[in-house]
Length: 249
Ligand code: 13P
Image 1 (tube, rainbow, N blue to C red):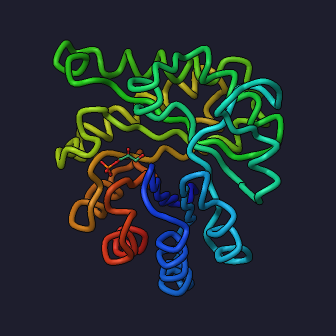
Image 2 (image 1 turned 180 degrees about the vertical axis):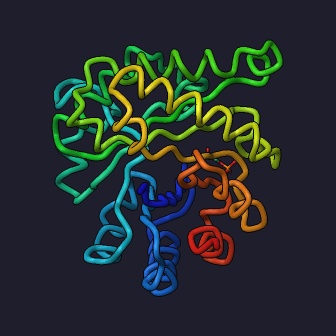
């Protein structure tokens, strides 16, 4: 049985005071929540939010990390520094990293392997551009990103990987993939994991959907067989919108 896993990606939003207010509200409103939860604040708020959610049912996530442990890498943040702040998971390969900051599959794979080597959980994001979907290439793009993102990851380490399918055209646009379209891609990604790691791993891996998830579409998406949770952007910034998604029924 896979657990539903709802994660909030706060992106480049919130000062420490604002992040603390949101984290405090989530702690009290999700304490009776039944699913797995994570929040990923900006680096600058990790320590503040970490102190508020420590010991609760909400995990602390980062939104990125460097592909090296340490060294002369101006502006980067190391996995060692994240662990020092109590970070438990890291989002890698987000479409904003891939497309705005030109991260490729090889770089993302190095980050995935390094984070896993340091015993963090990883949320590996995959997803196609609108032009790729219109050209009928959505499955193929997600397969390539999954295979390359997971290259060299052992079956044991895979148990700490979640995949997030985030069609780029649905992120921050108010357009959501239909539950049927999303489920078809999730099934195809699960098939890819099966080819790489076998049927048990394919059955166990959690695949989140991301892209304009809101309180009014969360339950419909999560009702689909292959959709095991959500990676939420805009709606994760307020308890009024994140809590109903996190407690969907
Ligand atoms: P939105 O929920 O704002 O579309 O963002 C999705 C996302 O990119 C989460 O990582």
